[in-house]
Image 1 (cartoon, helix red, strand yellow):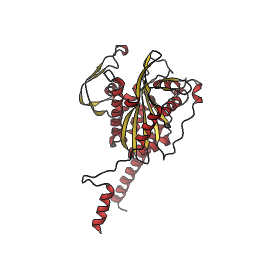
Image 2 (tube, helix red, strand yellow):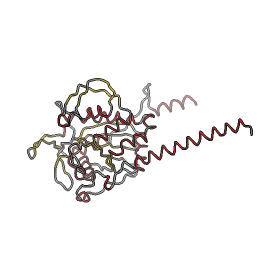
Image 3 (tube, helix red, strand yellow):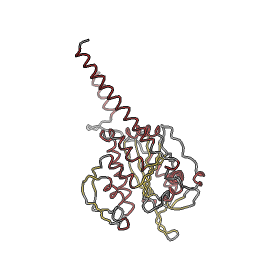
Image 4 (cartoon, one colour):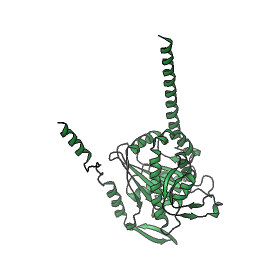
Length: 341
């Protein structure tokens, strides 16, 4: 073998070793990052939750073929003592259907007055203070579905996530301003209308704003729209390559009951799926405002009608993709095979 051929083989060998080494590092970093999201023992934000939590059944295990529902909870932990669990500032359910390959997103209005398992009736945002199983059961009972998983984070986790993906280009639909002297102006809201690049802090301002005529109703709409934009950004090639750094940045601020194996399966389902729609719960047609115990709350006029409303959303037929000439995919394929015969 000539010296030149030996040199080429050595170069190829070095490149292969480098590629394999990076691949091992990449996937090991991802695995460790995913594993770090699930907190146990003293690291769990629910370590001080009352033992009454065990009376609530464990969520059903997802087998990977039927729809899976994930409760997403964002909390405001400002001013609380160490180990104290805050009420949910925002609650959403992401429902993924691996068969229909579509995702539905539901925002739960936090003042919805409903049954909290083992704790009577209260606002839905109090459920998490009794532990994640209680929160999943309360939301699942309200919607008439089984909630298998939860993801829990606070302001800092949200900021870190948005910064980790490089921020998001997003249209702010109006000027938003609300100073907060109680926080020494750390969480002031001051955004201008128009298309702009939102980093973690400005994105938090956007999803928190509710100081207008429609308050929490339009805020949940904004949260769903922004979450969709973040999901799309994370599907980009750049964010996928940065995944180890993203996980490393957000891991300290997130807790979940998802195993690494479940995360891999869900990531595969999510990557192949499309957003089918996003809804507010309860919908306006079933929502009633009441005063209970001197506090203003939101009630559901008919729990049966709400569950039927959710079923109707899930049972909507999957749209058939249509090409620019107005033909479906099957019609295009039949036309092509016919012309080739």
